Length: 68
Image (cartoon, rainbow, N blue to C red):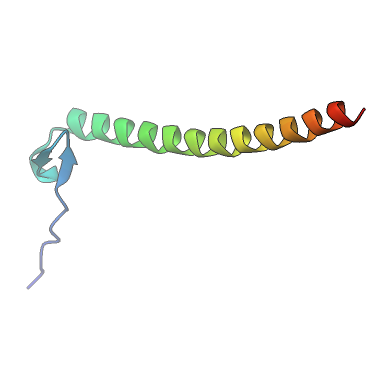
């Protein structure tokens, strides 16, 4: 007897969706949205790193300009 794997529910905008009940188009759009969210998170992470590095470099520059 084969056991059917239960797919996890998708939580979107505080509502749960059963994956097996979604149309192909809805599944595709969920995939797009989740992929874009991952990309946005990665870019935000990189921007945080860049911002911190820039701030440190500005501190070094200010110190150099002050010391002549």
